[in-house]
Image (cartoon, rainbow, N blue to C red; front, side):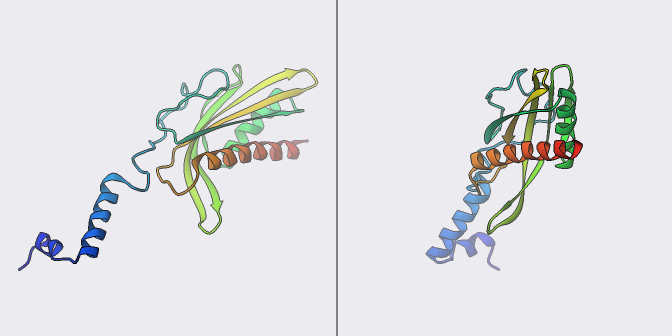
Length: 176
């Protein structure tokens, strides 16, 4: 009876090449698996006090988007919390005094010719009252933690961050 090693060595050259590539793909993750880490367990102290670009360990890409809205601080804080909830994200840090909330979860996006895909993200939302008109500024910082190299990570996280702000604006429109 022939063992498996003998069977592999008797493959023709293209068969050996495919077998070697398959083994290398599994071991080293040619799909990009070795390049990006997993999201942290807690996001409480992950982001700085003020919104700015910062390197989060294991992040594949980061985006920051800000919008100024004619609503009160409380309305914007509540709408941001609800938008995260509606997206299925877990908010694990919420501080109304600082005007900051952060969390993590899985973001779903529809990719043309691929269909819906889900990707792990971590986010922080900063809410700052600008003046008493009322005018309040919302800044979303989002990090992308997917392990695959199937799409442009920076364009995905830019789109997801913009979609998050649009979700907040839609919720605010229903409140008024």
